[in-house]
Amino acid sequence: MATSTRTTFLFLMAVLLCLQGNTCDAKDSGQPDAKPNILFIAIDDLNDWTGMLKGNPQARTPHMDRLAAKGIVFKNAHCAAPACGPSRSAIMSGIRPSTSGNYINKSSLIHNPILNNSVLLPEFFQQNGYYVCGAGKLFHGYHFNEEVKGRGFDEYFPSKTQDLPSFEGLKFSSKLPLGGWARQADWGPCHPDVTVDDHPDGKTTNWAKEKLLGGELQEPFFLGAGIFQPHLPNYAPQEYFDRFPLETIKLPEGYREGDLDDVPAAHAKMAHNPWLKRIRATNQWKPAIQAYLACTSMVDDLIGQIVDALESSKYADNTIIVLWSDHGFQLGEKERWAKYSLWERATRVNLVWVAPGVTNPGTVTNKPVNLLDIYPTLASLTGCKPPEGQLEGNDLSVLMKDVDAAWDEATVTTFGYKNYGVRSERYRYIVYENETEELYDHTKDKWEWKNLADNPEYAEIKKKMRKTLPTHHEPYGVTYVPPKRNRNGSKK
Ligand SMILES: [Ca+2]
Ligand SMILES: [Ca+2]
Image (cartoon, rainbow, N blue to C red; front, side, top):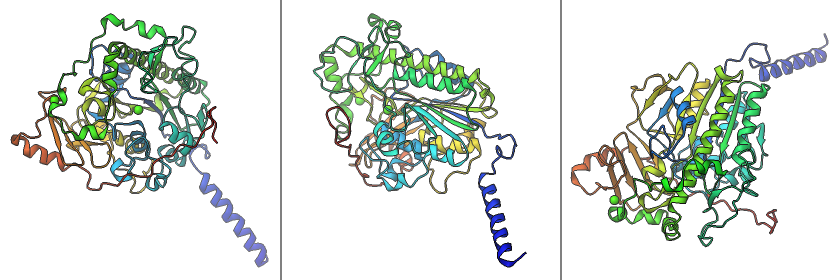
């Protein structure tokens, strides 16, 4: 072989070996790929008003409770931030808000260099050979639609530039007497012609069911189903409202007149909220609670359908299920109708895992955990090496294997620069940017009515809780600026 021919031959061999090396995963070599699939179910603004978390006896969520009984429910799970955008940015990047500076809904994801340079969860699984598909709200609306643009997804429903649902044609006929004080503050039964299949969450569910039952998903897969309710506006077909007759609706047990009297003024600076006052002034408190319960009931039915589809599919024995809600919601507690606070009802979330061969049915733990833990847990359960130096959460599979394993004493929620809520098994400690504080003892005060922060008896407890705070406090990141739009909604 002449030198030049031999060089060409060696080069071609090297290219072939290279190509083989790059694509030589278990599937291509004919070996069965043992990596588990992932069913990733997100719920928007669902607080602890579920059967499994027992936050309100009026709630009826038999399907989610059934799922919880099959695996492990984390009863003391909290969001990284009590707002859709920063909560989901933290879940998808595994990075704390205090590290990224992504604190509020207006914080940009892509123009934040820390987040933009991170490996987002869908990208992580794509890079690890997964087929990654999703539907509905997984990221936060415009972050996905206009910033992420489907990054990391092989397929998205309805499209890679839309994860926010359209409510067109859903709205019921009468208008609420709220004077248009907030675009999203609306609720009621859908128009009688609208069925659950027409609802955006019904469409997301049907998409997920078809994928699972079609049996043609490339394995391993990551399938995300993002359910939008019970985020406002709370529209659901009449049948769900009928499950909660208005005359039976009770106001939240956690509401107490004057509850904010012993709370530092800093909470109001963090997120002033006039909604409850307006809801009460227009006699809408009970109808609004009814709508939240009705929408949660619809969500529960839909989740039951997705889980049933998985269970009757060929993927049932090799698919991890993780179900989470992005933060809680106050329906009057602390005189608020909103998320956006560092109190229990806004930070506590639903977090359920079923991992074949790892979780044991009927497991419950009260160890403090965070939605930030989802990414490292999925990496651990699938045996995929996490991105170097990126993830700040804990691996929950440790608790799945042994609920008595050594664990962090507390978990942190951040809302805005240097405002922190810390939850241990017993206490909630809050410290605002101006150093004012709150402390609640959940063994005596589950509604967080009595602020103990000024009581010197609790000085040691506060000191201990403070030790779990992040040491770095990144300034606010770049604000997302929506594109200018024409009247018809198209970009200018
Ligand atoms: Ca949300
Ligand atoms: Ca109080």
